[in-house]
Amino acid sequence: MKLKSVLVLPVFCGATFLCSGPTVQAFPPATATTSQPPAAKPAEKTVTTPQVDDDHRLWDSTQTLPNREDLKKLKNVTFIKIKAFEPEVDGYRFLHGVALCWHKGKLYASWGNNKGSENTGTEEARGRVSEDGGKTWGEVFTIDDGGEDPTQAVSHGVFLSHDGQLWAFHGAFTNSRKQVHAKAYVLDESTGQWQRKGVVARDGFWPLQEPVKMDDGNWIMAGASLPDKIINKKVPGAVAISHGDDLTKWDVVVLNNQIDPELSIWGESTVLVNGKHITNICRFGGKAQALVAQSHDYGRTWTDQELSNLPMATSKPYSGTLSTGENYLVCTNTANSRGRRAPLTIALSRPGEPFFSRVYFIRDSVMPGDDINVDSAVNAALSYPYAVEHDGKLYVGYSNNAARKGTNINSAELAIIPLKELQDN
Image (cartoon, rainbow, N blue to C red; front, side, top):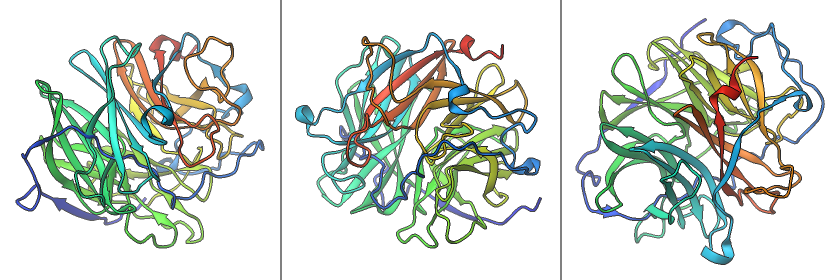
């Protein structure tokens, strides 16, 4: 194992940017891009997991990764639509990048929306809040729509509830996804408006997982680094590391890779934190296989991104650690789904162990029965998941395109999973 040097770029909220200015009611535009590589084509052929060393192993090689038809289906899962696809009502077509957060007994959700094409200047991020655990949702709110300049856009992001405040960190850009950076906001709960905290990370950083507190006192936030010009088909994974509890100052660390120049990477990534050891799990592109990189110094230096032994659809993954001590990964992980973004699955490790060893079926494209509250369609894509644990349940948000024609023409949906259903039995 050889650790590589990586580029670390500090970003400060300074005089050039609005750090504590007026509040805004619009929420940043959504993340999706017509220039990103398409999902790998579906196939039913079973994939044999490759043999790799421990630094690149995600799946427990003593266990057999099941085919999609052999997955154990979770019981007692509740499915709810957070935001319907209804352009005839609100004019929005593009929707992507659901984020979730519990804050002071309320469940917040956000996503990116666009009445025009995705990743263009008309993109904005919006959200809703539920006061009954996700059963019903209030009116749609906007955090930031980019303001009066039609070339400025803010897109989907992540939340953090910290020290009594609700923070939001969002990917932002100019024109058609140029000069990508991250902006921060804090909710003024007395007015329901979002206060701008300015640009907090540059170098193309787009946040995709909520900040996780590390033992060294800093927070780490996983995402991707989207350059203005993509070289060798590579959009690398990246992390941002805070300056302690100052959430307006983040150092961006861009991960290296030695992947074949002919194979694309679309570096949407997520992390698992175990003391100073950080595992970055990243969407590939050239293959329906997860990429992995390791850090042993709180995310400051990393091994190269390399192929893991875990098949994964070409979609943004989301990982975390449950209160039970089990690591989890939400995406599509089966031996024969290939690039298809269904079924939606959750892989888990045993408590305290590093490798995933079992996978459960959350839902497929088509839902059984007539009395369902979410979209159901043959070949629907269930993608870009996000998850948060609360009060004995795991709340999983995701995009559902219901097999509609177009790029990321989605509804925003929610699966509520009782933790007891995830027990290894």
